[in-house]
Length: 285
Ligand SMILES: [Ca+2]
Ligand SMILES: [Ca+2]
Ligand SMILES: [Ca+2]
Ligand SMILES: [Ca+2]
Image 1 (cartoon, rainbow, N blue to C red):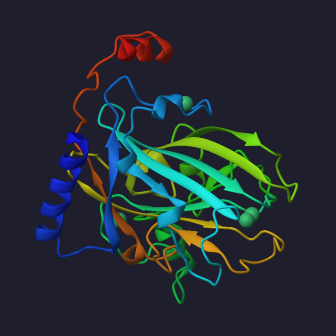
Image 2 (image 1 turned 120 degrees about the vertical axis):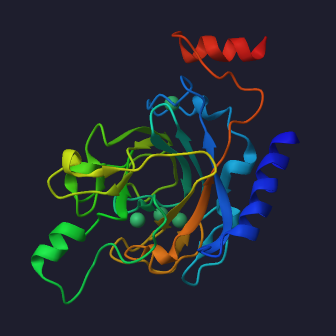
């Protein structure tokens, strides 16, 4: 497995050089070649080129509360990717849950320039400070889609509403099994694209600083799913996270690290037009 060797060599380098590691072990963001970025149609076939090493699976997630690991209660994967051509981050996820309802979601927090520090829920500061700084140097996204949230939306950026609208946040998703808000077993999946910001300004994108991605860069991220099941009003016993960073909803010191991986060998480096189906067919030849 040559691919695995590439990223593990990078991980060793990272451990040796990065004194600022966050929570847990470093993970990897897959680099989509230009032209092979996912189409956000809710079908994950365009993620089939991503090797297993990039997947974060429920078996390896952390629970802040009491529930033991039980994949029939909560099961999932998340995969992150990025593209130098689009300068966007891409997230795919799948969730299997024995009791789904419309207050359950991924809470995804991002610190693209890896500064750490508090980025929202400030106390004892002026309203002006809050408006300027909440969700600015770090961001929090609530990703319910394909579930339509009790709050009346599918996905949003907290604190900076514009950052949760297209083209800054776009997505596609669907239920594979079951239906929204039935309290019955369900499986769902979605894919999301993010325009990354080092400073998301209250006045919108033109006043903001976009974050430029580069190979081998390290970014800060955490993702949580509160599996509330019987009681939508609270996180009864299961708040699953990728890195186990308690307090990640407001402080980026509690995120984990993703390294932006180099291109995997053996993938096409450019695609001129054509559908994904045609590209896949060319892989199979
Ligand atoms: Ca797709
Ligand atoms: Ca459950
Ligand atoms: Ca930051
Ligand atoms: Ca549930």
